[in-house]
Length: 197
Image 1 (tube, helix red, strand yellow):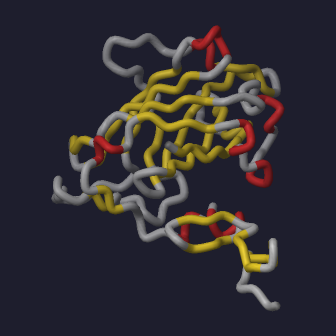
Image 2 (spheres, one colour):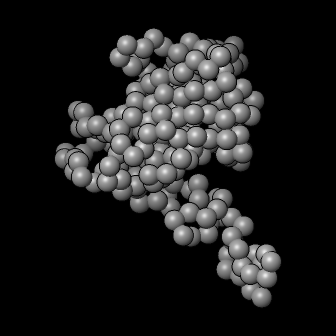
Image 3 (cartoon, one colour):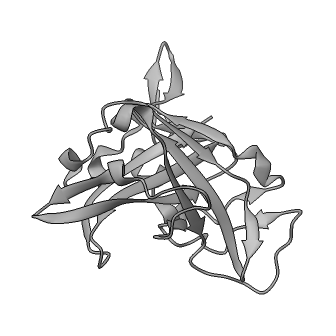
């Protein structure tokens, strides 16, 4: 019996041994390749709200200095506020809860790296569809929140700050690239995780 790519014979029938997504069976490398997506079409951005990531959702082959992330072996909860349109960019806020800092949340503003003139509120087609990072974490603190000092770490003698980059794959899946960067935005460590409802 011959099975399609990423499938194998299990219990006498072809079953997906890769990642089943939107009815397709894909390899892990294909699934996490940002260029395989034309961008999400989300009718109601409020649908993207609370998502979860388990330790098994850590994508190990995309890591750089992953030992700097002390929350990679645990679950993470992500709150992504509905998208808004501000100064020719999509904007949102995210709140991340981990075991670090006794569960004290990290909160930041996110904006799309590419703006466009008009926004169709009925159908959000993100302008950063082919950009690996998706929504980019901003350095400024969110309104009413102090900077999350418990999400800093020392790497090579420099203070580094956590910066999440959020890429919505569809209404149920979000990929987050966590980076520790210096004040000059030099990336010192990186960890990629998949979040799902």
